[in-house]
Amino acid sequence: MEGVDEVDTENLPRVALPMATIYDEEAVEVLRKQAAVQPHTLKRFRNVLFKQAAGLEEALEILPVEQQAGFREGLQAEVLTLHEARVSEIDGAEKLIFRTVDDHLIETVILKPESGRTAVCISSQVGCACYCSFCATGLMGFSRNLSVAEILDQVRWVNRRIKTEGRSVRNVVFMGMGEPLLNQAAVFEAVERLVDPAWFNLSGSHVTVSTVGIAPGMRAFTERLPTCRLALSLHSARQSVRERIIPQARKYPLSVLKEVLEKAETRGTVMIEYILLKDLTDRPEDLTALVDFLGDLPVHLNLIPFNSFIGSNLEGTSYANCTIFCNKLKNKGLKVTLRHSLGVDIMAACGQLVQHKLKIDKNID
Ligand code: SAH
Image (cartoon, rainbow, N blue to C red; front, side, top):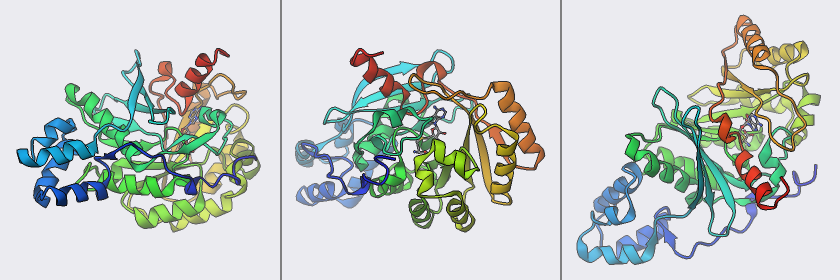
């Protein structure tokens, strides 16, 4: 498949921002030294910015007046600009489209389940180089990796937006645009900051990186971030079917993924994602293969109804049949849930809104 092996997504040039940002640890340290700000004062400055989700001006008030100018002139707070927001009338889910400094659009989804535990689904790349047939992001092709600042700014933006509702982000899932494990360096660093008590201070069990199955990245993730959660987009336990819908499956076959899962020493349970596609992944033989593959692995299986989009020729399994499939797996003793789709009316699945917008902008819809 064109694009899969050719693009070395890890080693592309990084986008340059006009000024250092609040996420730039080294630049902030230089400013701290120049202005002779005490480390504990910097800690309070970061608390206000990242835990209380305040604006830069409010955070600057933490610093002695004479030390504020250096920080104000040397740092920018916002990395992304909000381009558009859509709110679901069904469940309050919000889809935000952000514009990067070099004019790319990325998307972030805020999910507000009734439990009150706000989750945010963030992007790790502009577009994607994996070209999975069920995913709208794949249709856009790959443009570039997001930086640590661009990844973290999505979370800070959301916290600022929902603050007035008395909410704050509790869960972060890397299930927006892109393949996080093909932008490993930035994603790992961003995850570390999300769980760092001095930064966002989230619990590791509330940060999930979802991958199409990049085996070396999965190994590296479980070694470096054992308290965080990994999700594998399996979608089929039959090698031939998986290859049809996920080109990367040729590079990292099921046998390799199984070995990685067996050896994974994460504290949280690995989540297995599985989209139910009519006559493709929902047949009796798919069910048998899935039970065989998962065997005794300590995983949680999440069945996902397919979210259809313009340009896709796939058909999702009916909700009634999804339920039947789910119950059969339960009867086999698997830990399984059927995902209730949030934000269907705002096209909340991966890549769908940006894709839709690009089409409208180009007048080809
Ligand atoms: N590249 C990563 C993360 C982005 S996709 C990965 O593959 O896991 C995150 C999840 O979005 C995928 O597992 C898939 O479950 C879901 N997804 C993508 N397109 C979808 C669609 N059209 N309908 C339902 N779920 C979809």
